[in-house]
Image (cartoon, rainbow, N blue to C red; front, side, top):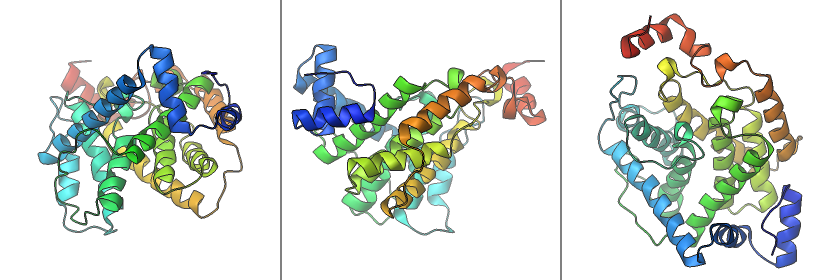
Length: 307
């Protein structure tokens, strides 16, 4: 079997010829490339999913405070806020869960880089919010998610694999590194990955999942990577929540039959061109954007002792 593909069309042709679903193909592909058994690959997938669950629980169990002081328990505060403009569990969980996981990263906890540490809350935040709200049926938004260990439901695994597939296509056509492409490559990519996985969970066909990813990624083009004091906290943590919500909106559009005029892979090409055109000051160097504002420089001096 062929385990390399250059385009999504090539992948779809391959899946059709081999009569395989995308998730089965990805697991077999990983087993081949890593020279491991299918059981071992599945076990490792479950282990990583479990890490995201553990990070989620930690981030919501108590306010997360980083050594820099830039992360101050936003997930906990949001989860326990009484007045919500949109009183809908999936929406509110999406915000809280994305915040929680990324705050754990900011505080030195264990996370899964999805696709990077700075964007680690977006994909699992969206998937777990959906799982709690629509699959487990929990309406109590303020409750702490219960531990949920492997082996995981096949549908849950496939949602994570759909996100991974979108990330692979972006990595092949552009980049996932903020230092190379700005935050469009980190949080922007994660938002597209989350949108595809959420559309999958809603039962959308493959083409609609990819359309949702395109809609999300288009709205992230040109996003600067400008971390205050060079730390993955401001604007990263709250950006995780906002990109996660953007994934929800993208899926709503795609499920309504609203297509992306520009195909996903062309959006990725545009992302690469924009990333190549970006000045170095807004590509993770902490020399421009928010990092260079008076307040940003104040925190840099306060935290790092810089001039």
